[in-house]
Image 1 (cartoon, one colour):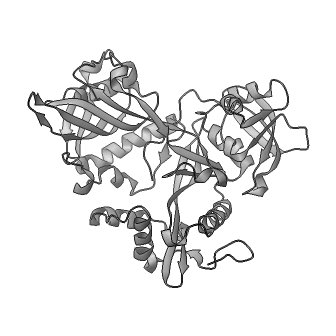
Image 2: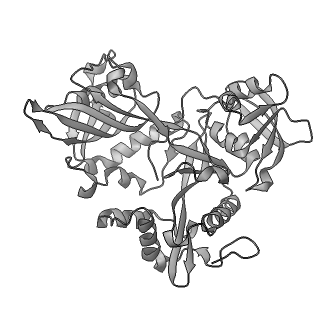
Image 3: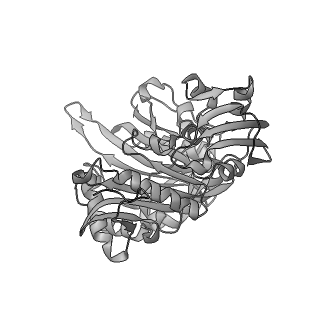
Length: 416
C-alpha cells in the first residue's frame, strides 16, 4: 500500500463510530494483543474523540490507528492552552516500514493546526519514534522504591492537625477531582481534564493489580475541609522472618505541605509493609525533602511528556518568561514548514510577543529543541552543551535559557 501525491495513504480517514471496535482491537494488537477488562474498554470508548481520531484501512482491514484528546495544558505563567493529546498510535506489524506512521502524523498535525491548537503533546511508548516529527521530551518523572524500615520522615509543623481517613475511591471521586483541578494552574505540564477523565483514576480491573489489593483511598482533612487524598494498593508478602508487604502509590494530591506530609506519613506507616513504591511523580516531590535517607529511596528518572510546537508564534506568545528575553530564533522544521524561519521573541513575566522577522538570528535550533525547552524543565543551555542548539550572538543563549526556565519543574500527572 503506497501513498498518493500528497504523501497520504489512500486508506487514511477519520474514524467512524461504527468502526471503533475494529479500530480499537487493532490498537490493542499493536500493544501486545492482551484483551482489556470490559470496564476499561468501555471507558476508552467513552473517552475516544471520534472526529479527532484516524485510521488506515487496507481493504476491510484496519492497519493503523491514531487519536488526539482535547486537553488544556498549563504553561509557564499559569495560563493554559488548548492542546492535542496524541494517543492510541499503532501500525500493524504486517504493514511496517510503508510510511503509514508518517502519513498519520502528517495528517494529524495538519488537523491540529486547523483546530487552532498551538501545541501537540504525547507520551511515547518508544522514545526514539517521535523526534523526527518534531516532538521534544519536555518533562521527566520520578520513580522510587523506598525502604520504609530504614527511611524515616521529618514532617513540618501542622501535620498533626490533619486527619487521615479511609474512603471508597468511587464515592469521593468528585471531591478528589475538585482538589486536582485546584492544583492544575500551579505547575506547567498539568492537564485540565474534560469530564469523564476523572474515572481513569479509579479504574481498577483485577488484571492490573499484579497480586495487590483493590484500589484504596484516604482523604486528608483539616477542620472539616478535605485538603488532600492518596490512592494506593497494598501487596501483602510473607517471608520466614515475617511480613514484607509493599504499598504501591498511585496518586497523591495535597493543597499544602502539612496535608502532603500527613498522607506520606500514613503511606510509610501502613502495617505489615516494608516498602513504598511510587511512579510518575514530579522530580521535586516534597517527600524527597522529608526522608532521612534519599539513597534508600532509590530514585530514578524517566522521560514523560513530549511537546510539539504546531504554531511557533502562537505557542511562544502564550507563555510568560521568568526573565526578560529579546531573542531572534532561527527555527528549522522540515515536517511543518510553516514554522521554519526567523522569529523574534520578546517577553518577560507579564507576557510576550513572537513574530516573524528578517533580523539576523541570535540562536539556531530545530522545533524539537523548542518543544523540549517549552515548559521550562529542559534548559536551552543544556541542549546547546549537547550540540543541539547553536548560539550565534554572544550572550543570547544565556538570556534565552534563563527566560525559558520555570520556578516549578513541569510535571505530567498521568498518561493518556
